Image (cartoon, rainbow over all chains, first blue to last red):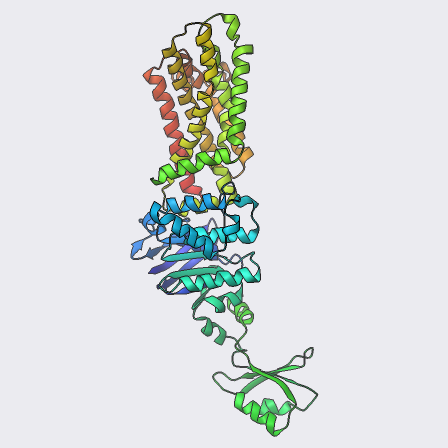
Length: 307
Length: 244
């Protein structure tokens, strides 16, 4: 549905996006990850037709964005970075304006607006000018305008920035609920968000594609994936743990007293560790399998490659 | 309603959502009164026409039109709403036209609200109302030219003050291009044709006949060309550097 080939954007000398290629299908909820300045927003601006690429092609629904931008823009809902909106309009005026421009006919318009107002809990601020709203409300107004025409493709640039944990949760639920047959692209630098809502992750750094797979696959890249962390209630000899088959490394955190055992790639070590602990009567009071640590993977993937 | 109509309506409403339109209209009415009665000596002339009123319009527009136009594009750039606007399924042409029409309508409204002057002159004497109507139309057309220039300058920058000053400078050159201030620069080295061309670009020269109620085709054509030219430039600027 979205097909991007060799997408490149240069600003004078600076290459913001470098030969990016990917494909996305309906049903994909894609998390766009990357450090600040990695090219996430620039890519989104090109996908929505706001910026013209220096080179490369974007095809959406089989149409070339360069020649069919209006038809494609009608299918896209877009929340730009920072959720800009006309501050002098009230929320209801603004949503009405967007709904009209989006061509929602007058019979359905009120119903659609009522729906998104309810979905984003904007009832209390409908008649307030947008410039007087809190950051959280502004963001939600931006989301409301992005989904008011029930778009097939939803592109959200940092939708949860500035929201409190409850509001973040609300927005994530909203994204999950609307996306059975839709294509959603969410940029964020909140790593947990990706595992919480997305079924696909694309990591960009320095304008280049560094990773494109499921969140589970991203976690698997972590050396903490399937690692076992345990804690002993009092000191005991644990040196034997390192000898166990399949254990590659052991790390003891002096501050917390937690011991982490890293498996060799593909090895399952849980049963060996529990067996050992029982036989040696180790005073284990906590033991769990690590899923992998996103921040560690993120750092590994995005840090500059040494040539 | 089509997209252009929706944009015009939004832009027009936004002038009145903030005090911009009210302040503009009030100042316009006050200043045009002051110019007409005190400087234009409306009563002392003893003539039943509105020439002293119309004669000052280029000078009023010189400051007031850039003031009303300066935020149009600058604000969109500054607040980032240009990204929203340009990713909606509307064309740049519709956006440029919409902003122009909305602001031109505000200028038209301000002109209409000077009707007490027309009432006064009809009460005091028997003016030729056809001439007055023609002069109103001419003045509105000239206001459109000032507006197109100012909107184009607003598209250049995200800073409203810079947009305002740029617009005044460019408008000022257009107003004065028939006067010695500008022509002296060309005198002595440029050919007579160049000087004539520069002189013919003057808003003042073209408005002179209009203020007297003569709507000559070349004057109307001139202002229309200025409007269209600057709107095309505006379109190009937005198209080229909407993201800057």
